[in-house]
Image (cartoon, rainbow, N blue to C red; front, side, top):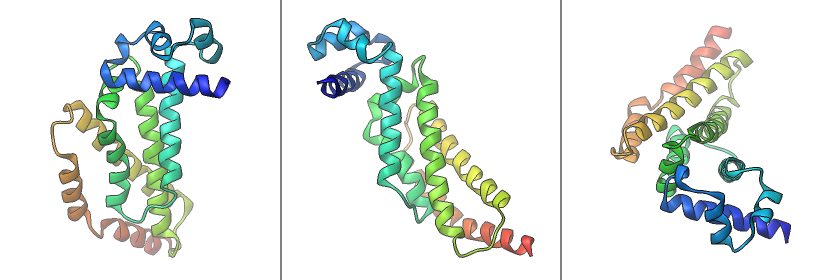
Length: 187
């Protein structure tokens, strides 16, 4: 019963977040939506922020599990972008709230995984140092993170999928060249 109650609380929270901003959601809203009492809510969660954090981190873990490997820059960026597009209202409500930091933590975690998976697949056949590998991974993590935050700051007005396709076309071969240069520098 405990897991079902937690699941119901999280589902109600997400449903409410689709309808209204995080700052307008209360514990009372959730318990009424779930049909539980306040004690049940507080048995499982200390506060609303704890529910939001668990939901965000579970979504990050789910995306990471669904994408154990990433073979291209396009796939890396699409993985991050698709989550945001699939949950547009929820993301905007959370992003434009006092809990923006939680969304940014999620985004950072997903960007880190995606960049590690992408670069890991590229460098497996190359002999580059750990410091260089970390540098390249960090570059892509920050680039993906920055692209999505910039788009969110602009109110998600632009077609990010189209922009992603163009930037990937413009950068085609550059990642491979970075890896090859690292290998040449090491020798």
